[in-house]
Length: 294
Length: 243
Image (cartoon, rainbow over all chains, first blue to last red; front, side):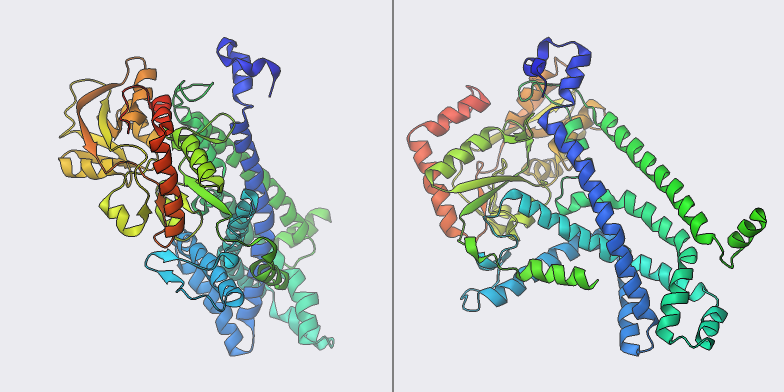
């Protein structure tokens, strides 16, 4: 990166450190922070959408739809995350490939399962075998987002389901007495009011989601934990210009600080959101806000 | 939710027919944590004996190759499910692995494994010995009467000896030699060396016989003209076994 980094052995400790921390390999680590933040930025709204859908379905008056919603919530919540991540992603990937196989290669002679091998025709591979590495990585990343969204969506669905029930019945009845349809009452009265009940549960989920991002490594995405382990391991002088001992502790300490700062910032933001949502609500929080202002 | 489903469907069935041809790119799967066989260099790229060997083999077989890294633990399952096409990661040919995947002929003669400890008087047959999970060395230790301590990465097996969790580490001699040399007397070889496995070969799916034959031919030609021996000496030093 810097011109003086060409011969690290001659450097003083400070500039050695500067060169060491700016190797292309370390860029992988910094890039991985972006990956984690991007994952959170996409997964959180996606999980919320899954959760909202699940909660609405679970509340449905049509029994089959309600069963699907409730089934989704209880099955996904009941399966250990790690089992879900190991099994579901492989199954999902193979299901996609099998579907494409059926569409694109109807005349393929060989069976898809050959002993241990899962073989689909080359046109059905996802991503295609000759796609560049970044396509493979983004595909892995989207599978990760989808899996995270499904898992956390189930928890969010339960939170939202409870929050919808927590909105006082009298509010809905009043809305209907004013002549709103069921749907209008849901959209105009219930949904705007439920967030204040949902937020404590959702903020919990957000915290758990932040801490769950190292699961990415299980899905083959090179996340910050992978890089911390790889970079922190002992490096012998034969294979690197920057040999060092076992520095994993420092790398993991850095990760710990990162996660702590991140959750702290989240707490502060969530607190503000809570204040905003409580405004004018018929809850104890809303009541005390009203009294303080008066 | 609707857009999500639509996006997924588009991703799944999206027409990418334009460049579909069998094995136009061969994805080479490696661990990237086992110098000198394979490791990630300062530039963040796969490097080492197997990188050079693999690139040369691909050139001879006229294939375009791309390198990917994968955890050692799941390196066989991910090959079998088609995430990459080969395993070239210092993997010894054994009967158990051969049941699940296919191997090319060996490109590294049957390896010697060795014990490394922090002091010379460690009894490697009864003490605590660390080894990497799912390796022939782990299998050997488990049967030797010593207490086996397994780790996911090779680096952690060494760290376990350094911080006293294990009395000794059992691994390929060629992996240990540079580490012992660099430790400045802190670590040393101990006990007898043990010959294990049927040499190191490249792993492929059992259904992929055509690709295996191509790489097999490339290895044969490299053995014949001496380039493989030159590579072995370059990365492992003069005392390495050659063909």
